[in-house]
Length: 456
Ligand code: HEC
Ligand code: HEC
Image (cartoon, rainbow, N blue to C red; front, side, top):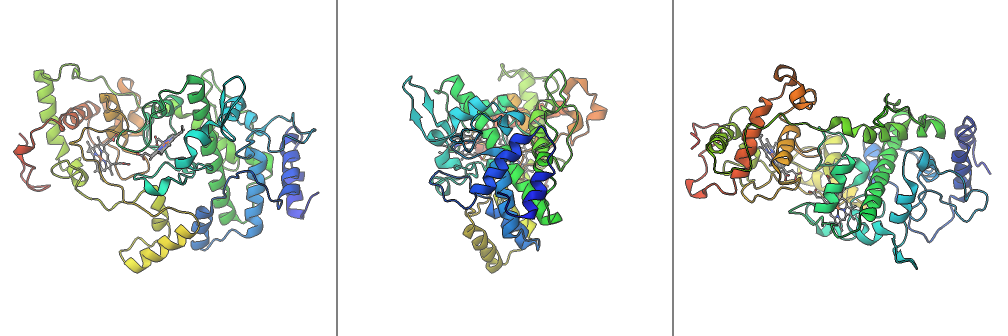
């Protein structure tokens, strides 16, 4: 049932051993075009629109090829592991997801429609708890999303903000767990603390699944737009599994770009190596009234308003978040991609409508935080604030003060760590930030940034 030469090339190049993949693909090809009542993963039309606008359109045939490949590798919202469970012969086929390193049993609990079985176990956790905000596809665009500020995360971008790892590195398992247990303070992302641990674990696995799936799709779209063909046969796209791993389970070698799924899962699997270890803190945060704490706050205040760090350029001279406020989120990234980063309202309006027509949400500016409120989305422990300042906030304008070279903490000497200030000084900035909700506003904000403001 091969419909075109193109499919045959993709399927027939496949070496033995990954037969399950192309068996599934054949069925995908056979069934494509059939209408199904089941919820489906929505193709990423925004990404296709970006390429279209950049003068590298992805044709309808190519889009179909992407959808079929995605179906064969990642299944459907109801059946992630096996999109065709009723088919006798394939019912027991090994899921590609197992090969990609996913725990399929966890995915099955989180996927599909919500119901409670005879034993009282809850199924369909993602649709029950998350989909109305984050969307069935994980695009951050569920029915509730347009009413929220900030918008729910679009997992498909693979961009996460509140994590312990440096820069654009993926979150660790523990980072996602913390987000689910605590929620994101000051936003509509709720806490799921009351769910049993096995359900939290299933949801974490499902978020990772939607994210790997979505990022794979984006990379395939980009590849087809640039090269006009797929990166290789479907087994090459899935790529060289199982990967060789070290004792800690971290892959030893980074896969080739063409091995799209492997290269995305590699980012996740190697995240634990990117965790920011702080240098030891000279300050005892359990003694807020100590002299050393007062000195640290005073040093931190100088740094906050220094020409070097200029935290006040965004957070405002009053630290109330009223400095520069015209930066857009990743959701509005296309504006830069298209070179339309100008102030012509008619042009902005045109671009916005063009993208909203293919499913994007109305763009929103991302405001610097009002640091007087003491509400921290990434956690309120000193270590959380340290990491936020060290690494900046991925996917937004907040810049990093540390470097990838310095994440090893005390194991890395200062002269090798780089960064805009010594890492010990970051603790002083942490002290100042954490003192801001208590600082007496009656002192008034400092006059102007860059002026001769003398801190207290
Ligand atoms: C009421 C809407 C809502 C619901 C329900 C919801 N979320 Fe969120 N979620 C959000 C918002 C809003 C954000 C973005 C917060 C931000 O950007 O500061 C978010 C962010 C996240 C993040 C990203 C955190 C980071 O570090 O970037 C993850 C992961 C996440 N949610 C998972 C889930 C899961 C899993 C569920 C279901 C168990 C869920 N959310 C339910 C609104 C929601
Ligand atoms: C270019 C603008 C910019 C600069 C410079 C900047 N920030 Fe931010 N900061 C932001 C934005 C924007 C956010 C909100 C990010 C978001 O919601 O995604 C933020 C958020 C924060 C948060 C909240 C973290 C949380 O968990 O909620 C802290 C704390 C913070 N900044 C401290 C600082 C400090 C300290 C400096 C100077 C070292 C600094 N910022 C420099 C733009 C900036």
